[in-house]
Length: 426
Image (tube, rainbow, N blue to C red):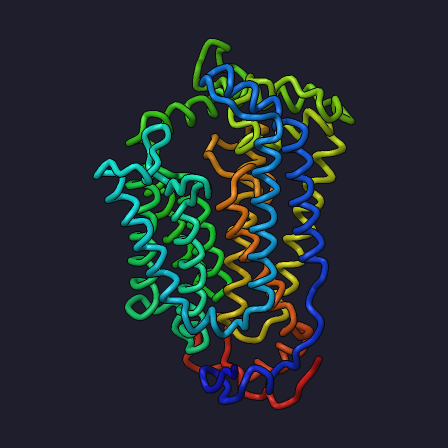
């Protein structure tokens, strides 16, 4: 499959010769998945015992470990498929991916209102399709991936044409589709955490595409105002924010502070090298969502400060590989795809860790590739597999500067139109 005429009149293979992919992306992804499996092996039996005592269920000691193995196999398969899938299929069908995500979310909302059994309601919110023995799937993740693909193509074309700051052609369409997605996720599904990560995806792509700083500042102000409205209109979110601002002065009797207090206790208990696998106290029922949103705190208790620093270093190393791939791509659409994945992955890492150590309010956002649950891991792995595939089409950034030295006169951003791309480099 060849890509002709969208910005250079040449095929992508005429511009960049395919070369070896960035194997470190696959390596870091695999290590993170295996770490998540180790954690599930360590605290899965404790989680099963807690649920059995509280709900009268009959989970076996190996239940969560087995489920995590299945999730990893599915996610690894998604990574491989995306690593082999021609990127032009993503570019060609980007709008269809967005439509599928929107339809899935709308169907879930209608099914929840109708009280259908497969629309799973948890804590007053309907966010998952219950698939019985096949587990559950969160359509918001489909919508995020669809938004990533659609906006990368849309903004890539606009940026290449020098129209990234055009209100009518670029900013209004982007705002409308983003507002629709956020309304479905934050208002209908009551999932502010996913809404924040989606916002991070959109904003990262806009700034990489060359958004004017003043326009960007105005957009950030609007987004913050919208987030403020979402917070003040939801009592549980207001309670989390109030707890955050009270900090360590929060009363131990304050139920809203219970989660963050025990997260800090878990990290503090771990000391320098941790209490070791199988010795976690907070995983026995004290720390909520020990295998999901709070897995970072549990890892701090088990592996200690040194273990957490190593984990953060691993996340940073993977994020740096994403930036390197992004910098080496010529096609703006592909560059924005990677930028969106960087914003997605980075937002999850920073917000989850920040919440667990008390420097950001709790948002209910997962730690990528480590938290228990299949849908988030599946789509994150698929996105990383896509970046792995795109890493085969990079060139040195200095060559990109040579190729873009003649800028489109209509462009007021940092992105010019490539004209001289006849030479090829592996």
